[in-house]
Image (cartoon, rainbow, N blue to C red):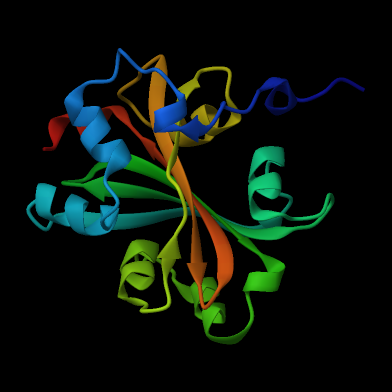
Length: 189
């Protein structure tokens, strides 16, 4: 039995900006990658209010190895994985992948399972218990699993994408948010 093409894809190398050297990143890309405020709010402003969340998938599956390790999850454990596109003026600008461990989905955090096409960022940044961990960034190439997920169905192509991820804590419980910036982000300020 041969492996499917998805198994041939790799994972991006994530690291803090201070540990990586990125001479090719423009100041515009850096402003998106390193901004610690609400990405949702920034996209709403940049699009003149023409912002939407398009849900791609939401299911209980095994996270990627680096996601599992960052969240301190045991091997074989499943998580609630939500993948969405954030649209500005009808164009997909960001692919977001949220990984919520089963152990996080108790108490008030349960509401995250019922977001539908609402923005996770709006929930996170309105919760007074929210804390954000360090931002990690990555250059995501055509060989990476998240590239394939992010670019599926996107017309405007690029050989590399920039991404960032952070562990957020709600009521002390972790969840991981990956945000991959699609080519249309370059049309916003």
